[in-house]
Length: 99
Image (tube, rainbow, N blue to C red; front, side, top):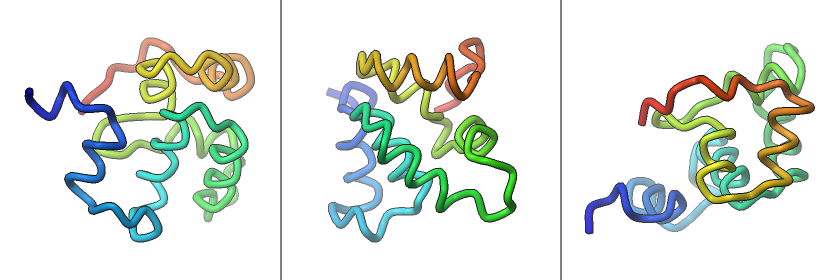
């Protein structure tokens, strides 16, 4: 089995270690989207918004290793998070995964 077949959090653990507190905020943001944790997505996006562009802009522009939140939520079938990212954040469903 290649790393592409591993769930996203396992891929990050292989690369970054198991201590999530040491992961970059962007990786934790993508993992939260993978798990469908809308509250956590919002919380981390607030921390990432250091330039004051706003939460939706920050969510839409944050990537880690080619993944964005929409890819992570959609790939794991987390419909509420996916729906939130499309309807509220207005993320582009046609943006390619560059991982």
